[in-house]
Length: 458
Image (cartoon, rainbow, N blue to C red; front, side, top):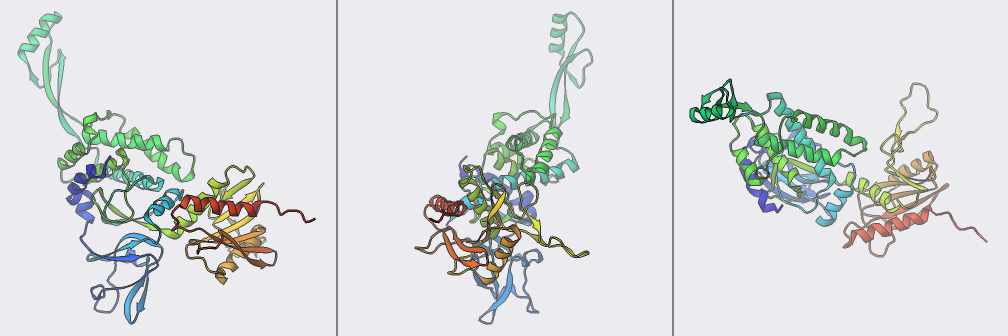
């Protein structure tokens, strides 16, 4: 559905649900990730401290620039409210088209939801899996609040033909039916309370659509979500399917307009449900009128790590010998381990969590640690120390620092030198590339060369 079809509903939400409790008009300060931002004087308190929300302070590093208070932006991008008067709109260094691809491919990544602060979202093309997960979790959380107060009900007129009339009796129709049936009956009508009407039917449809999406998932992170979706559908078992007329933005807008003031939880649920029903996607940056929801922040460092792992997993899938593992996770799909073996009795054993572990026939061959920063001629010494320790622990022949950038003319994988038995490499992916797909293919090909056995010397 076109973005303009959803806009009226977002405008209606300005004084309902999230909009009523969270929306605040703020002056926007434009910024770019990793940029130093000098703050306006209004953001300083009388005692010289920053007037910034407590839950936002940990996203930045307060500092000074030319003797003026400033903040150093990190890898977070998105709309970041600072206080009731100011907000940062942090743009990525990555082109927006490539950014959407990175987020979409970062399997398992979930953006940070600022539940206390709302913003208006614009429309975007494509629908990353992480966004669907956010919408599903938001709808489930809102449904929990709905269930605490009980499903909304309305009165509908029911007409019945029986020997025990209820409510208003229709004399002419009753006499005609009694004569036709040859026994005393009456046609009567009365208003009955029911939860089987528009809002709950829309909710059921949205939950069933989500359930169909996740029902076959075997990923660990979806198990709890799947169980909650099943319980939600069971809770709405007595609710019938919506009519086509009820599944339009104008119908949902009418539902919101008629909601009682004390049931703002339904306004939130209708906003999220319509995004799910119409497969709408939200732009990570830039304001619009598609939806009014809590602000979402993207941690580009984590996205780059998850994206790189997905690129390698997809690119090396045809080689049955190769397995790409996540060193941040344990279990069969992960490669997290402990540092000391053995360890001194009574000492807490630190964990070892490399970003990407590549195995050939269950033997670790390459360790890769992703660094969301430009590629230097020689990797940072601390980064080298870290990845060489990983190599020693896992017995990997090759260790690599993967950087988010590739200067013109440099290869995707560059040999730096040896540290003992370990070959150290600079890995590079140009996230600004016009064809990010070609960049990914070339990077995978370069890594695949390292996986192949060295040629025998004559």
